[in-house]
Structures are given as structure tokens and as C-alpha cells.
Amino acid sequence: MTPLPPGSTIGILGGGQLGRMLSIAAAQLGYRCHIYAPDETSVAAEVAAEFTCAQDDDVASLGGFADCCDVITFEFENVPVAPLAAIADRAPLYPPVAALDVAQNRIAEKTFARAHGGTTAPFAEVTDRESLEKAVDEVGAPAILKTIRMGYDGKGQARIKPGDDLTAHWDSVGHQPCVAEGFVTFSHEFSVILVRGQDGIIGYWDTPHNIHEDGILAQSLVPAPTEIIAQEQAARALAAKMAEAMNYVGVLTCEFFATTDGPVFNEMAPRVHNSGHWTIEGAVTSQFENHIRAICGLPLGDTGLAAEKVEMTNLIGGDADQWQTLLSDPANHLHLYGKGESRPGRKMGHVTKLFF
Image (cartoon, rainbow, N blue to C red; front, side, top):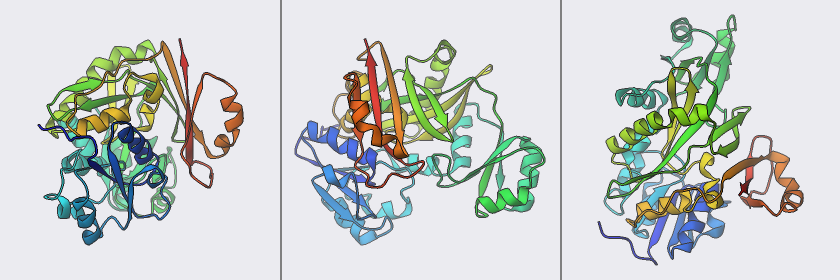
């Protein structure tokens, strides 16, 4: 493993706020970032050295982009896998394509977690209206109907209650292939955020307690309550097994429910994650810096806490308009993502507060 020297170019597939924060972390280590994204307006490109605006399936543009990069990563797990074959021999790609394959299909993801000893909610595949009825009979109601591919922050989902009109729910997801998930009774939601280097060494950040509102992450808090800490070891063990099976390099996030029977795996994100934004100020080394370290073959940084307690709050929609009020508290660390238009449900930034 030969470390990538400062001055090298890191390619990032995707142009959102995660790419923006990765680019900032990379610049601090002396690297240049080249953003590849389909939208002309990219908040990541604003802080990067280079920007290629092209579609994700544009093989020629992907090839040209790869030729300009020394290593490539991604900030969005729904990058189409097939076109990445065009750059496979032009620059290393971390995390590996195998991680995208698993994360992009909710059924494959849950099956993968079960294969490595994890527990998931009961689930069944749904391909049409008839199979939806069979799936609900199998997993029970209440249940959640989720599109197998795409969908995040509550999008591409429908909550099914006993006696609901299943046709209406099937229409609401656009007749796309879905998975029906049975209801899980849980006390808390949490995530395991790990980083794995090219040498196989794994580091973990403190486990955040995640609070969601309307299907969107509202807050991540550390240290987590004792109910979560009691299940941390088992959840970490599963996440590590999954990372090792994929020969993973970079930051991996696995989300869990804390239940009376132990941690129940929900989903994984093969990238830096919203529930780890608190690490920018709240950890000795942030998830963004350690992701850059990992993909560049550098030693990993210390993942320990930098304060006794950390609170990260997402700024969603008009919340970001309160920037002056937020900055009036000297303990707050404000991050605005540079998005022009605030819309309901849109993540505009976050604020992190440290307690000593």
C-alpha cells in the first residue's frame, strides 16, 4: 500500500453537501478534488479544484474524468454501477463497487446483513399489486412499503396500516419494485459509523442516538443512552463483518433499531453519513478527514470524542434562515451548505454544539 501524496487529485462522484465537506477535508490535507455531477449547480464544486458536469451514464465523460484522478470515491450510493466499468482500470475506486451493489437494492442489503449474522425486520418482495397483498399478509400490518432502489429521507415510502387501501399505496410508489417491511418495536434509533483503511484496520466513532422527524434525521446525540450502548458491541460486530466481506475502504454507516431482543439492522450507507456530521468538531478526527485518509492509503486518525457531549441538529428548510440567532450562541458550530433555495424537507445545513 503506497500512500497517495498530497497534491494528488481525488475524484468525487456526486455534487451535494457530502462532497462539499469531503472536499474541504481533502484540501486541508493538501489534496485537490474533482467533482463529477449531472447538475450544473453543485455546492461541492464551489469548494473543489475542478468540476465535470455530465450525466452518470455518460461513459466518455466518466472516462475523461477518471483519467484526471488518482483515486475516486462517491458521496451518493445511487451512482449507477454499470457505467463504472468504464473507469475500473483508470483509477482506484473506494469504497468498492461491491458496496454499491449491496446498498442500492434494499432486498440485497437485508439479505447481506442476515447472511453475516444480523437481524432485520421481516420483509417480503413486492412486484405488483397482488404480491403486495401477499407481502402484507406475510409481514403483517402496520408495515412500511419502500422502493427497492432509490428513495431516502422518507421519499419512496408508504406506511401501511391495518385495513388500508393497498391499491392506493401501490399507486403512491409508482408501481415500482418494492420491499414490504414488518413493523419493529424499538426504543431508539442509532448508527454505527466506522472507517476501514486499505490495511484492514477499523476505527469506530462513538455511537450516536439518532432522532428522526417525518422520516428525516433531525438530531444525532452522543454519548448515546445506556439502552443503545448495551447493544453497541453486537451492532459494531455486524458492521465490521459486512465491511470485511466487501473488502471495504472508507467510511461505512449502518443504521439500527434498539429493541428488547438486541440491535435490528435497518440499512447501510457506503459513504460518509448525516449522523456523523457531529464528528467535524465533536471528534478528534472527523468522518470526512478519515474517509480521505482511508481512500488515500494514509494512517487513520483518532476517532475519540473531543468533548463530553455533542449535539448535532439538522437545519431543514427554513431553519437555516435563523443563522444569526444560531451564531449568537458562541458554543454553536454552524455549517451552511450553500444551497440557494430552501424547501420543506431539504437539508440546508447543520449546527453542532459541544459540551465540556
